[in-house]
Length: 118
Image (cartoon, rainbow, N blue to C red; front, side, top):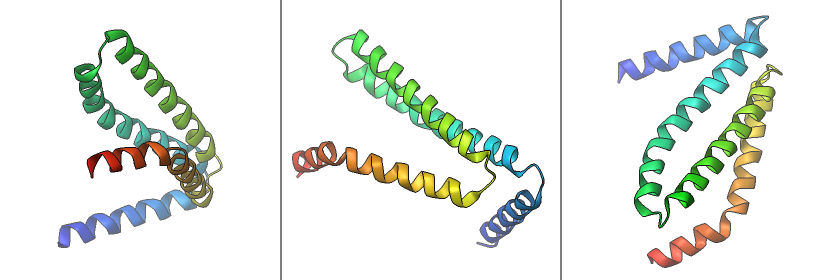
């Protein structure tokens, strides 16, 4: 447990160091892009295996993965540009807004899956 608190303290020190840096915009942008690329890599591998296993045609799987790559490219570009502002508030508000829009737009499919499961 002590190790977790040490990690959190070091993360807090790193964030305060970035916020005082004259290069905080580019640094925040680089950190944001790196984090999103890691998340994309983590999510893509199991999704690709699942899609190729369940797809009726290989063409459908390839089309879905192309759209997946395009959407991630757009999201990474948007958050990379927002990160250049150097404001964690703006980045957080943008992430919250994007999450709200995604939740609203995916309401019907999620409801359908939940109904199917129950």
